[in-house]
Image (cartoon, rainbow, N blue to C red; front, side, top):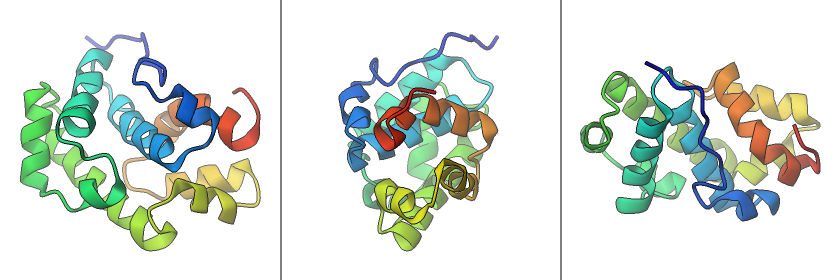
Length: 151
C-alpha cells in the first residue's frame, strides 16, 4: 500500500537550506524526491534517504556518485526500499555523475543556466529517473528559494 502523506523538506531538516537555495540542501532534496517519486511508502523512502544521506554521509554528488551500485542496493535494502532498489541505485549514481559533469555538481549552476523555471524543470527531467512526479515534489519546496515563489 502506498501512502499519500508526503514527507516534507522540514522533516528532513532541509527547509532553511532550500529557502536560501543552498546547493547542499537542493542536492539532498533532489535525492529525497527521487526516492519519494516512486510508488512506495513514504516512510520507507524517508528511511532510505536517512540511511544513504544521514548514516552513510553520501550527501554530495561526488560522494554518492562514487558509491558502488551494490553498496547503494544494500543501503536501500536496509531501509526496505526493495521494489526499485537496483534501478534506483543505478539512477542515483547516474544523476550524480551527470550533475557533476554538466553542472559542476551544483543544482544552482543548472538553475543559473536556465532562462526560466520551465527550462530548469526541463533540465531536471533530463536526468534518468526524474519524471513529472519527482519534479512536482522537488519544485513544491524548492521553488520559493530558487524563484521566490510558493508552488
